[in-house]
Image 1 (tube, rainbow, N blue to C red):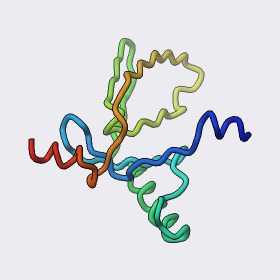
Image 2 (image 1 turned 180 degrees about the horizontal axis):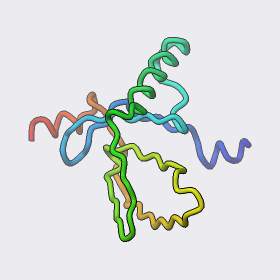
Image 3 (image 1 turned 90 degrees about the vertical axis):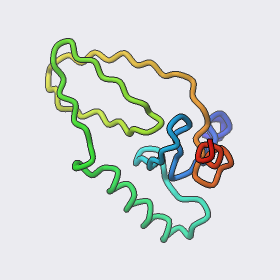
Image 4 (image 1 turned 45 degrees about the vertical axis):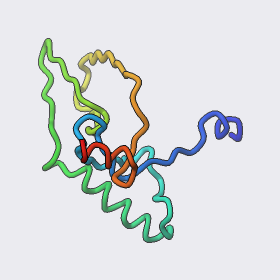
Length: 119
């Protein structure tokens, strides 16, 4: 296990991410990977994290893509959370994923965010 921690150390990133092209803010938390909020007491951090996760998982702010033959979907992971439903039964699902090299996430207090506002 220690070898994996060296190979894949804990990552820290902002809760609110600034899109590097648009300057728009987005919530940057998800249940599988975010376990705590830095610089907060554990109980308070967990309460806030649970509230943010519930918000992000709210179906009223989700886009539900209904697949049809020949469908194509693409999204920008810098401002979109993706969750694949297991609702296709015995049907075959083919997915080809392309991930482009991106920039390190930054938040509202980062100097890069301030440059976006002023440009």
